[in-house]
Every structure is written in structure tokens, then in C-alpha cells.
Length: 207
Ligand code: ATP
Image (cartoon, rainbow, N blue to C red; front, side, top):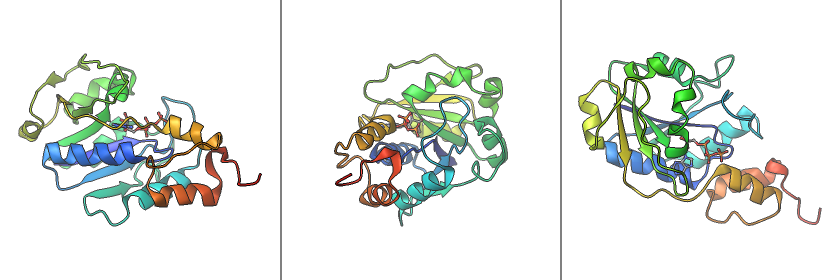
């Protein structure tokens, strides 16, 4: 089984790391790949470059043996379409795309959505404050036991009951730009990187 959490990671935060850890444990997967959506097509352009976001991801993961950073989408030209990534990564084993409830609610608008059911399962992580949308994208069916996903090649959606952290990159960017505290929302290494490079319009001390 491959387990992948895709995201813009602008910046990667504790909510992502917690979601990956919970997803890995629910699936019984050896590791989770954090896949940088380098050029997301479905949202406004990221605030920081691909290189900064990749470096922050690598710092956040550090030596954790259960997490892997992938630059696969970063190395490709053009928009990052999940369907292309899934097609390229398919290895005959079930592939589970970890996804927050907010992002899952928008899957119907993804590029070539009708092809997804033949390529992956979804494990949906319910974010606090985001509405729970249990509509199935075309070709998918719901199952309740995450550890059973591996029994099917693709086409299943499982809603995880676990509580996620109430953290979002949007809120972190806003707090940083207004000089607010981000204690505990980022790893120390990522926060140090943001300060060193003055990302997200961070007000410089004394500036
Ligand atoms: P933004 O606020 O910029 O939209 P984000 O915090 O949602 O960013 P993304 O990189 O867009 O972060 O998210 C990547 C994936 O991780 C998405 O599927 C998203 O729903 C999920 N995710 C993000 N934050 C959390 C969280 N706190 N708990 C669970 N899943 C999360």
C-alpha cells in the first residue's frame, strides 16, 4: 500500500504532520509520502516558491522514518494534477490519498475526476470547522473500516473518525504577516526557516 498526503504546504504545519501520523496508523501503513502540489491549479498561487515549500517540508519531516517527502510534482512542468501523479505512481498496490474534509468536498472539481476511482482510495480526515460532506465522487463507494481499504484495489472512501488539529496554513500566514504568535503550530525548524528567509511578509524585529 502507498499512503500519500498531497498539499501546497505553504507552510507545512503541525496539522499536516498529525494528519499523516493518524492516517498512517489507521491504515497500518509503513510510511506516508508528503507530496508537494508544486503548481496547484485549483487555488490561488502559493505565497512562497516551490523551493521554499520543499525545504520546509524536508525540515518538518527531519529524520522521521515514517514520513517521506516527494518532489515528483515539483520536477514536472505545468499544473500539478493529482490524476497524473496517481497514474505515474501506480505500482499495482492500493494507493490511499489522505485528504482533509475541506479538500474532499471539492474533489468533484478536480481534473479528470471520473478517472480517480480506478486509481486510488480516499481516507478523509475531518478538520475541525470544515463541513462534513459525504457525497461520493463518481465511481467511489463508502467503507467504514480504514484497515479494510487494502482489500480493494481502488474506488473506496473512508471517513476517519479521529479529531484533527485546528490548524491551517492560511491562518498561520496571516498570523506571521501581522507579527502574531505561531507557537506550537509549526515545528521549530520550519519556524526558524521562515524567520531566516523572512517568508510570509514577516515583520522583522525592530522593523
Ligand atoms: P491553506 O489554509 O493554505 O488552504 P491547508 O492548511 O489547508 O492550507 P494544504 O497544504 O492546502 O494546507 O493541505 C494539504 C492537505 O492536508 C489537504 O487535504 C488538507 O485538507 C489537509 N489538511 C490541512 N490541514 C489539516 C489539518 N489541520 N487536519 C487534517 N488535514 C489537514
